[in-house]
Image 1 (cartoon, rainbow, N blue to C red):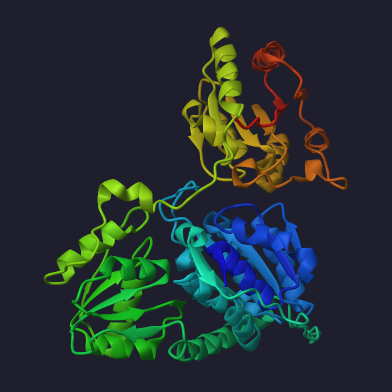
Image 2 (image 1 turned 30 degrees about the vertical axis):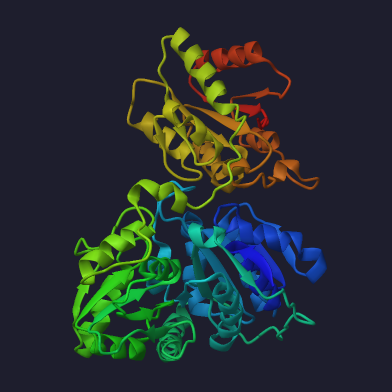
Amino acid sequence: METINGAQAMAWGTIEAGVAVVTSYPGSPGTGTFNTLTETANEFGHQTEWCLNERIALDIAAGVSQGGKRALVCLKSVGMNVALDTLMVLNMTGVNAGLVILLGDDPGAWGSQNEQDTRFVAPMSEIPMLEPSTIQEGRQMIKWAFDYSETAETVVIVRITRSFATQEETVPPLSPPSQQPRRVPDREPLRWVAALAKTMTDHARLHQKLEQATTDFSRLPFNRISGDRSNHKGIIATGFAYTKLQEALAGDDSDPQILKLNALYPLPRDLLAQFLGQCQEILILEEVDPYLEDSVKAVGYDIGQTPKIYGKRTGDVNWVGELFRWHIQQSLAKFLPNFKPERVYLEQDWEQEKPFRKSYCAGCPYMEILTFFREEARKLGQNPFLTGDPGCVITAAKLLDAKLCMGSAIGVSSGHQKAEVSERSVAVFGDSAFYHGGLNALIHARTTSANLLTIILDNGGAVTTGCQPTPDQAETGVSISDLVQTCGVDQLWIIEEEDDEACMRAVFHQALSSNEGLYTIILRKKCHPV
């Protein structure tokens, strides 16, 4: 037996499923699984590849699947937004070899710009989604997902959260297959072509797959009903919230019925009908939004089983941030008469429940650098609008005026200019963000003759997620400076690692004193951990 965390467990299950190719863009909580698969690639014969963005990662995985080998894509919540364009076509064409997406949501936004609940992607894309409750179950679930993906010829999404990824459990040793599964590529005409002529046919076939999945998921071993069947109070819990529920309930003798519901989409209609018929009142525990709460109500309405549902919409379950054990006990105290657990979880101890997140930000130079920039602007009587992208720039967030998402800084700054703001617009972003989405925006800025200063903070990789490399560091890569010059900026300044404060200030002063035009500063300063 070995002790591993949730991220490692998902990697082990992927290896045991015989994955051939794993793609990703840096973003926790999915990064831990990708890192484990990278570390084991030589030993087990699979390939791993960091990609410039999540859509490219999914595109590559789609091609691997069509070619007959199994593929995994690791991405986080906001990364699914980027991959969605490809996903909304893959749902229609289907897949050949197993294709699984490991989706990392971040309730509480411990390392994200939002805490979006990405479960809603499943019904929108009509793609199956599941979520494990325990570490060993996650390992088993992702193996099952690869098999089901091939059987149903569909992408399968497995959702995890940061707390799941960092939780540890003792599990049996890794047991890789003797060889990776391989399927013959399907060369049937139009099989992998998304075209108007076959959209209706593909969509009808997709609905047939979902109808079958609805039946299959009622027999899924990851879903189960437990507790006293004569107790008319029931609880539905999914994913890691179920594990927290078990810990919050420990020692209490209320013995409610509990539906462990790990099939998020499509919902197991027959199993839900059974549970709804056995209960008069049901408490639903989930993270973050009332996805299950609304979905269960819809199923109940359709089948004529409508017990009273308590959850986020009724104010009985916390709706903002991670659902901690103390939150769950507060809900249980209102729902279960004489609730008396053996351990009481307290709000003031919430940091003990907070998921671990390694910080890579010690020694970050960007707060100091942007302070210098602001100071030089003040000397010139300027107060520029500073817009940033996610990433290392967030360490200097209090010096920014705006920050939205990857690749947005240049567009937002251009918008400030179109709104005729009285100050200069400046877009600030990192090297990884430039490759992810900033390059397209810079081309657009040049094409539209934007009056804009862009600052690219080049610290040599995606540091906030673990120092993953960018193409600028690869022997066969394309440098940031070459790309910027190709975009035709009016002037490019490069501040090197060895350049001192006086040099930086001089460049800032010159750039801020320049006439209208498109200008770029590349600032090459690595982090120096302390």
